[in-house]
Length: 380
Image (cartoon, rainbow, N blue to C red; front, side, top):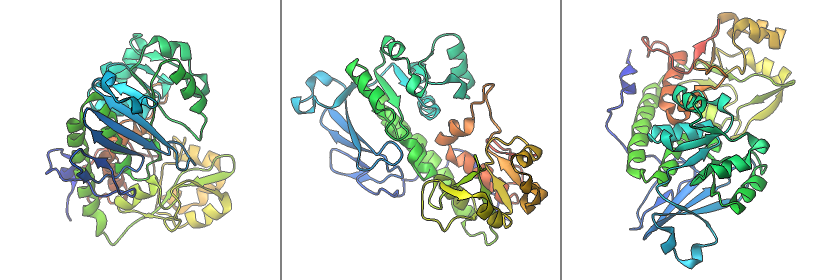
């Protein structure tokens, strides 16, 4: 049987990116050349002396919403026609990151020293960042509608990276703009391809002048991920996979075109709801899920469950599921911080190849017999 553990070693032959679902233009260089990307949510257009960065539909259910940001080494030399857009002088040295994903991207670029503020430090896993917070080197600026605008302004950030759920943050971002804080929307969490999320490292690199470094880092991850996915693509035996956990009587099942479904497919699993074309969560009643869940061979990502017994406490009917009787239940909470910060949603976003390796070990343990889990663990 072919072994693929070696694929995790970064040092592979670097390859270019395959086209993502957005297609073009991806990145448009000054000479008119382009290269495709997995990410659908942003584009970059290079001009002499500045770049135009466009972020598309950065919150759920947004349609035809685009934000444009002008990045330049000397904003004083920009043409007057660009003055109405948010302008940011790069490279930046002081930033506020409102998402743990943003923190992970910046850390991967080796620019954690630039982080001066975060939102909800309890959600952060990284020990170094938490230590800096405890020493007062990084400020907690609040969370969601409770953001402390005075603290944010006092930190004098070159840019604040923000995310929005629906349009809830637009009022806050408008206020911050009026107060002189450049606010940049990020929509990496909406990408439905694991490599699409990871490719946002190229977006963050633009603000630090580290485009080449980001290209190298991403291409390594891309090559590693695709090599592993290719290695399991021909497997004729694919375990049937259940994912998630009900919440308040409704099971929000991942759609067949979602981020979770893509991970399952690329790891050699057979997602039980793969036929659904949605890339968003589907609200399903428990009874319909139970019927199909009886077919599952593996159950992944069961929410807050820490053990098989605790899983049954959510619903006693789980005891009747064959997948629970066999014990093939795995949660992505192996790396948790003291306050609950989950590294799966932090470094796992930047390194989907490592997440994929975990899932391949779950679905096809014969291929990775000596694998040591990074993000997943088997519930006992």
